[in-house]
Length: 235
Ligand SMILES: [Zn+2]
Image 1 (cartoon, rainbow, N blue to C red):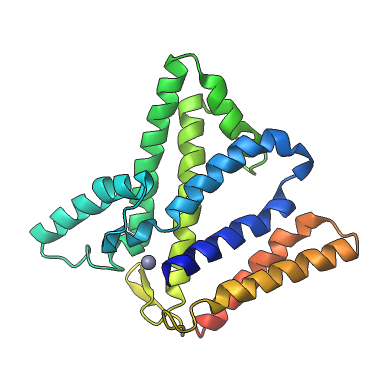
Image 2: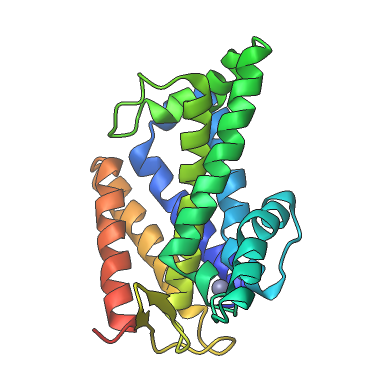
């Protein structure tokens, strides 16, 4: 997938879920975590392509240094092809390694903020969304909260990049199996984001027109994304 298509696809998926999962009446308290989450998500959406040298922002640069460079050095030693484009960085292992690195970086930042007596900054920037997740995070201290929240945001952007690339004929490798679709880069790779945008607009229009609860939307849109993926993968 081309860069701008990745960015557009990830952004529309992120935005399409918001009205369904969050009560936007609380927009004032939700704004700080939403801004942090979206910023990390937005930059992470291009992270797998650090294997072609894309490192235009601090998140890409640090991922390139701390995840991709060690893979490159190691793959030279063992003569593996993991560092090639759509190799390690475009796999579940690349996703896991990137999430662990960013978890540690943000947990360390959370720890520093705590030492400085600024744990309220972490609470302000994570709590309003963490509290709405279907998992109990109340036992976590501030460093863990910031690490977890950040790694989750970065991981979500990363996953959507992998999904987008899996739609193209080159595909990506998932546990050694090539997952590929029927789309060609630069020719019709923009079709899934356009279809998804239409599905989002249609879903919310119907829900609003019939005064149905907006929380139905994430289930409908996840279903649409799943079916669209299966069709593109020719399954
Ligand atoms: Zn890619």
